[in-house]
Length: 131
Image 1: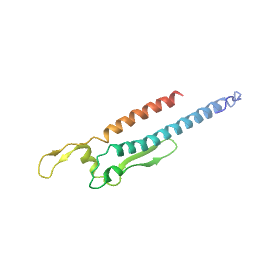
Image 2: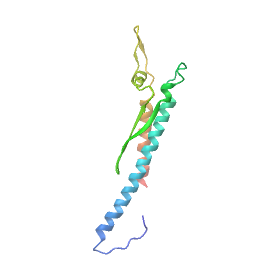
Image 3: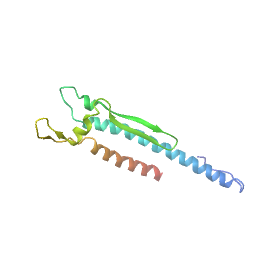
Image 4: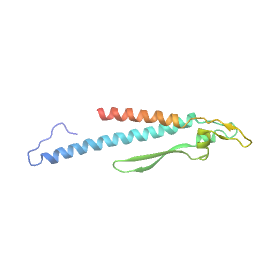
């Protein structure tokens, strides 16, 4: 944004509107960048905390990725998912019944990372809005 704006009464409203739109576009771009960075960080953190089996070389843990689903001038949406073993996410996160009876306890690795990233996103957006 420029430091000085010359205007007269005939174009005052247009200049104010343009200045506000420029400010809004700038903040929207900053927030989109935050979401993009944090989505990739979330996939990396889940990958780090995922359970690994020596038998298959950690195939489940290696499968986490962030994919951009949608973007327009105001919104951006990412999906964090496991592309190699998607059917295991619920079983490993929440636990499951064994074949011959009993239960396997869950290993929380998705929810704790999601909660932490949500807090980080909120803090960064608040910091950006305060500028």
